[in-house]
Length: 397
Ligand code: PLP
Image 1 (tube, protein in one colour):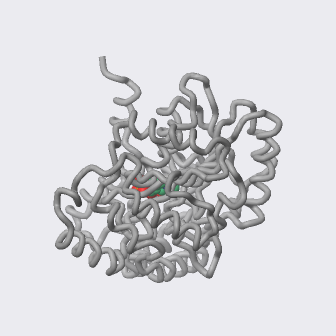
Image 2 (spheres, protein in one colour):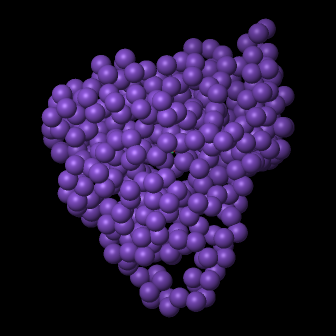
Image 3 (cartoon, protein in one colour):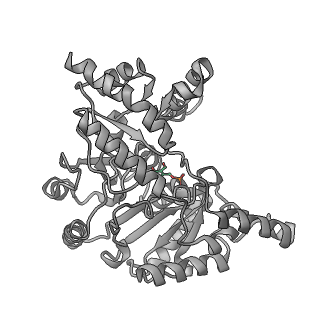
């Protein structure tokens, strides 16, 4: 007998992946330039030059068996120290290299953190704010927890505090926040973080146990108009940061990120030990060594995000002019657009007539919208605008 749960996950791919695969087929049929693929969050601008330079010098100068060998399970000490120094200098994060664990991207950081904090079989709950990254459900359930989505308030997709407070219970073990957000592009302001953490601190007292705030931050540096992304260890003690270099450095296929357990977390050393144990039980061994060693010289650097900013403005201005309603995006590289009919799947099917490949929002836990990943060339956006306009007119006629 197979695991039916695992089989189901393998058979029904994520909706994003399904459209991404469809795009490949369609491009082969009619030419890539005729398909407007907005399905996946694959960065479209190259990594900064420092990534290539560092990798080349590592390969030419370091002894190969050391460079490609296993590192400590938690990652190389020098690399962890460089990350801690950077976080302390940049965000006054109170970070310690002894509480940093290098991971295979944010996905592994999340699944390890969830396995570390959820005690299997006790039906503990993890609150997420909808719309949310669909893999949260998979990761939470695999770690033995129950996902509790709390819808954000339209039209600005900030947190609905009343709904949040009502969803907290003695079963709540963790809350995941993702800012800048996939799929809305919304950034949580400092006031929002203050209100959120005040509610959480009160709930910790009421229920008498830590409630972990898991900050999923692969888009931290992808912000526009000088918007600030508050660093959560400064606001809440029981914080676990899940960071990734996938998006800021355009390296999603290389799989590198980290977990930071706040040094102010209750019994932080035990939380970190549980992180190590979860990484071990899940078979991660260690994060890719070459990309670990790349980190120190690339901290704080990003790909040229002005391209995303240009795409964002062009798409947002044009779509609103054609009559679409979009969440105002301050970060990441996604636009969340209200479908022009109640069923977002039907809307996406109709968009396909114009070769527009959009992702319906149902799997993000917030039906009725579509996600547009605008990490594409500006030229693709320019060429696709008539298609977006024609699709809107379809609904007017
Ligand atoms: N969290 C969010 C919100 C994401 O959008 C993604 C990837 O798109 C991930 C986590 C996983 O990122 P990584 O490639 O670092 O595993």
